[in-house]
Image (cartoon, rainbow, N blue to C red; front, top):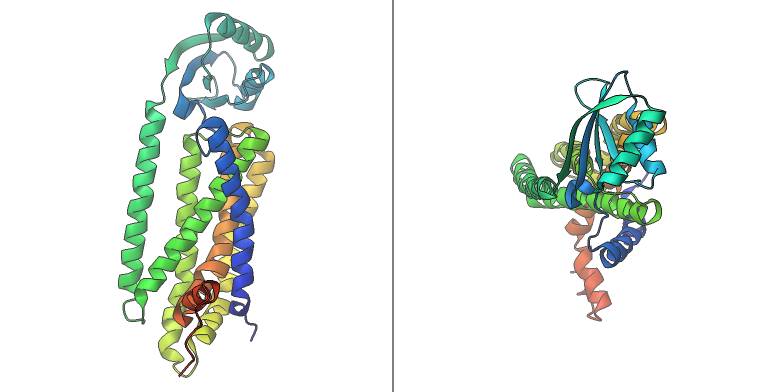
Length: 314
């Protein structure tokens, strides 16, 4: 039987190598911009413009006009139908507004201005606060649910704690790589980023619970095997299901990323990164952590680091 769990510290090292550059990027971003991630006008404030065109429009075409004027953080969405565009960009004065609208008329076509107003960062702050509360509440519920569902398995609390750890791993990977993209490609966080992050959390926990459930079934069935063997067997029995489920979603996201519009590219990129990370952490982090915790390897490692000899096995 192939032993996946045996190489657990290699998997942990790979996770660390992915997360550390993201943490460095967030530190640099904090020094440069005051926040770990570059913020869009959803959080910093800016201009909201609503234009009604005579013919259907493509949001990406309208956005290209603003990008050509150096407003790369502009977001454009349609409202109601394909004739109305909602444009969010940095604060514009009357002269900049006139120049941009003239360029839009020339390249896209005639339109009617229905709204032009300055927006503040209040909505973005409220959304961020709500997202943080949602993550904390979800973590508490997940921990309690897994502890209760696995109450007949020894040390059921560990299953919930390891699932939360894997979830935090996925959040760090997604936010770290997005912060790095913010430094390299000037990507900025908007409300869709938070939506993508919450979706990633859901997928990550779901995949982890599938493997944990098989461990719960195998522990009483295979009492003659040590815990590491039971966990490895359970992982092998479910890995094809995990990969098949996640790969289906990943292929769709890749197609959308390659052929979708520019306005959702960052949203899809976060989802795609999160899917890869969630698949990896469910198989190679959350499950091996159970073995590490069960074997008391963390304590032995700390004793070696701080120079205290481990007690001899009885």
